Image (cartoon, rainbow, N blue to C red; front, side):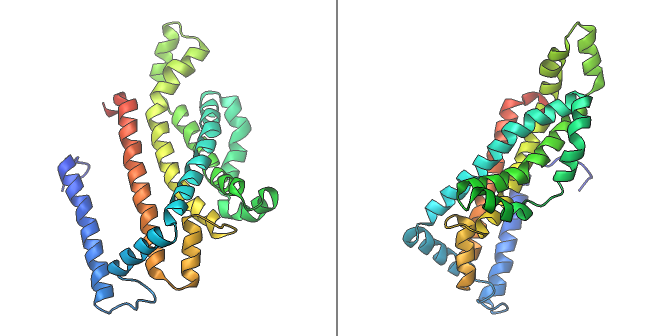
Length: 257
């Protein structure tokens, strides 16, 4: 292995699959071999059986769809407000000076700490779940986008001014295209964080969703269902991550240069 040397697509896929195979083998050895009690960790076969029971008998597919809706609903709301604000902060230093102290302060506040207040303000319905994801995602998006826009190469800006570009054109024709690939990558990362926030939101005051199922399974000591719920979250996250990467490559081909 050579530092920073790229890995081919085939080798990358093979290495990624190899880790999952080794992980599954270690899990099977620990559980089928009797090294870990089923009370604490279900074996892969039990996990699959309990997962099928959830889907076939308990309507778990509905819980999955509800959780996906909550994640993307809260994330889209945060991105729709946070990306424009972050761009304004990155492009205009007075705007950055006005908002940055509050944004930096707020991004350190855990979204879970707001749950009691959000329940008081919005109840235990969908609005509360969306707001938890919004709070957890919004401040991160704003600050990261502001940094991405503010780091745009100065020579590009100066060249545009030399060619007669207006201040508005600098934003729309230079800053936005130059930082768009990084903004898309930021959005992909924050979407992953949103999954952690939705599970926290569903653990308290929820009657549906993957997090609610995990809490019910914990009360019954059903580790098979708990692990299946965790695996479902991971699979959905992995699929959405690959789709996000593919979309970014298609939308911003110049970022591959």
